[in-house]
Length: 272
Image (tube, rainbow, N blue to C red):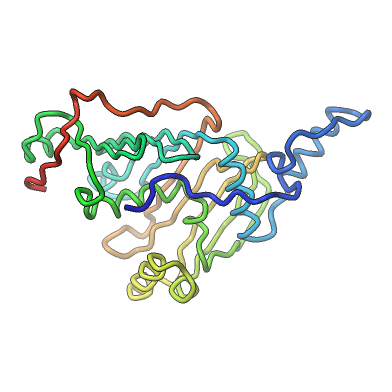
């Protein structure tokens, strides 16, 4: 199964953001003026996707933890409830805990899942949690990998991604830079990683040539929000989208394995 950690590239920055520059020595001038100038500089829109990926990736890894909320908008209610998750993430390593339709915990290289009560009853589970191997996961592994892509900036900015618009703005009262990004499926199908090429080819077969995203990045180079506009294929509504909000960067998160007495050690396939 694809590693469920945050696979970010930590490249050295050249003073584009506050995180990239690290601690700086105060000059003998006006401190508040210097801070204001640095804030304005850090909020200067980045030139291209590569710079955006490197800057955000470095800042995210330096912060090490984050809370992430994912919400499906304009989907049928039954579909949306299976896509809405709140996650605590450790960005270095493999630990994460997501709650939603099914709960997931990745702790010390072990995967735990908590199915809805009805599914547990159908599968004959007597305990709420199950410890799972990659083989047990099957298609769920691919689904979960798609769920976690919003915590991996490299997966969100693959081959074929280009910034179509960028500007300074505000998001819920905080200064930010907004980036509108389009991902060209033709480029991804030709130059992307194997899995991306396969996905791009399916999109092209469905008549989708570009995927569209919107990113809000704060003055530290950290993600504030991402909107992924869903292509109108596979029954998805025309205006369907995923909204991912990020908060509490660098703050302590609670990720731990469930109590042993609540864990089924052997996965039971049972009725889906």
